[in-house]
Image 1: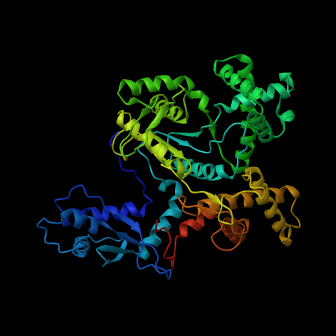
Image 2: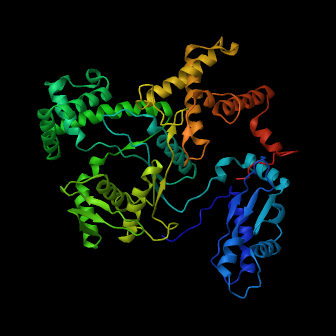
Image 3: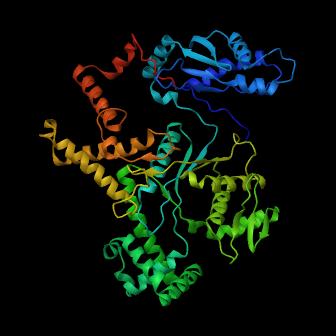
Length: 518
């Protein structure tokens, strides 16, 4: 599918871009493909903004036209010409050229007020962007079976769920919330061998009996590392599992079911919906996918392994290991082929930490090389990697417990709720509340604080996890926003007015400068 512009009536950037398109056509008629570059203005060190938006085309255009007989002596002259050719618009209060040709744009306060009035009257749903695709898949969270979810899964889960909600708001016809579980690999050999030793009678093995699956995993790992006889049986168990023996497959399925039940408890607390599909689903698809790539001449031998080289990267994708086994790259290749050709996904989005960016970039490049994805990144079907930074403790290191273990996500949510409940109980207003009301409020505030603390920062940077900061009732926190929302609801309730009637008044005497700028 060729590139199609996303329609978004609420986007100020897109509306400004349309205003500047005409000016750019007149200013540089020999550059018909130039696209307006519009960005929000950043504040200076003193926190002052001299404009709302900025057009940044001048420098790039001047560099492109250098040596041609254009009459422009520098990027500032290009910027001035762009400004001069800009048509009159009710949304723009004023424009000026700064530095090397930046066109600073100040929006009209009257236009902002009218825009906000229209939003209140029409409702926010009518302002949702419309995407030129029917099917979107967001791949996020993705914990490993037999291991508990930890703080490392927090950002993928929160960011992925937020993206999925945005696509729902945009009314995508089919949205797939995919949980790509790590449910296959050599570790299952030691788990199954340890399971058979601990519970000789399979009927005794259940969620209640095993208790802490993480502890069960650690115990099996200790035996695997220190007991050669157990290690051999674990390796044999992998072979028997992969060959499809019913006893071993049943044990594997039990382990997966118990893990997924524990994951679901966390997702319910966070209000996250996911459709699980583990790595094992793609086992039978890997040989077919690699055969297709081989037939296209993409796979070659390298030091005993079968690999795929892609443009701009010195190291290859290892599609088949030297021992003939597959790895996560093999699985991701098969999964993406299935998503594009069987599930007919037009936009695949992967939400993982930034450390996995190169891996996914190489997979996408391999598919472009095969002709399975278009070369232009703005054409569909397409794939996008959404990366994020690490969660750090207040010491600036990876967020861990005092015993240097990874923080369990359940414990983190418990602590957020506990702190919120303690804070609530200090307030006179809750004296008449029931225990259920206090519990639900503590959960809403605590879990909301954890989510918002993640979303309020640049996703690409590492962020310092601090309960004190995220549960603060002042500043840019979820607690402050929820408190402000509660006060607004209280004012509306006490007014005795119908909210639909209030909307129709639509009068703003002094709109805030930052309202709806984005």
